[in-house]
Length: 357
Image (tube, rainbow, N blue to C red; front, side, top):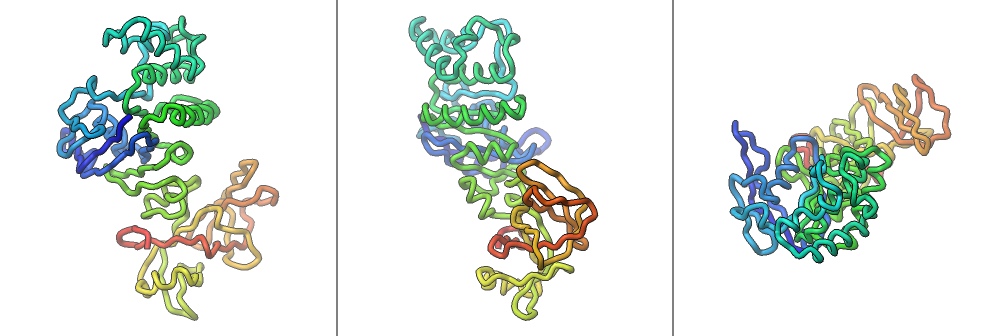
């Protein structure tokens, strides 16, 4: 096992395309960390930089205490699992898993022991004689993980390994990979664009946008205390609602975005007082928009029944928001309903910087 450290790493591709900018990241020995963000945010580039498949334009990369900038991929003691699994189609499952060890001229008995152990761990021993074309997507994914395990690397790198699986199998495999980390205790760096994967798997999550880290924190801290509007909008499904308005002094401090006129809770007053007369962004999670007998009038424009809950897409004057409500009410499109915002669950962001106030 080993830690992974990136210090002021920048990667610029041809055409002056900046994929990663001044990135500082420390992954602790034995940690399961997830890199998450939209397409093009630099997360796969970071993984390839650690693996040695790309060379940083500037900055330093350490695996453990060893500077690896000039170390070839085969000597970094990392194993990478790709999105397309990258199995050799002409080889059996056993041979795919044993191939890397054979290249390093390990003894046959040692190779068999390593393949046997990984196959038992992943429940794929019964597939030894099959070729990849005879396996389902989920089975191929397990073989790809098994091929990485037999190498006993210091660091596992996963590049969106579940994206080709159906929804049910993704849920199952998420749990299997988390259990695998607990069993192996090896450092794992996992890349995904799926924030549900990130929140359910990572001990810490690195949220990226346009090649820069926005926030590093455990899942619930990201959800409850987002560092900025981007993190607040990216983490959570449906995403956080945002309404731009002003802080005004009128019978106390209030947030006003007509027809919304909201008294500021005591916990926020000292922070928002300097913003009096200025524009701010109010954030509110869908589950904190509540159907009420008093509050703001809204109109239902779309209903999404999900069984255990219902999502209501609402118009409050010119503002569009989403509410997550209990499913037993007979809502209809076009109905006018009264809603309120949970005053203990409000978020406010600076309109200029978009950072959390």
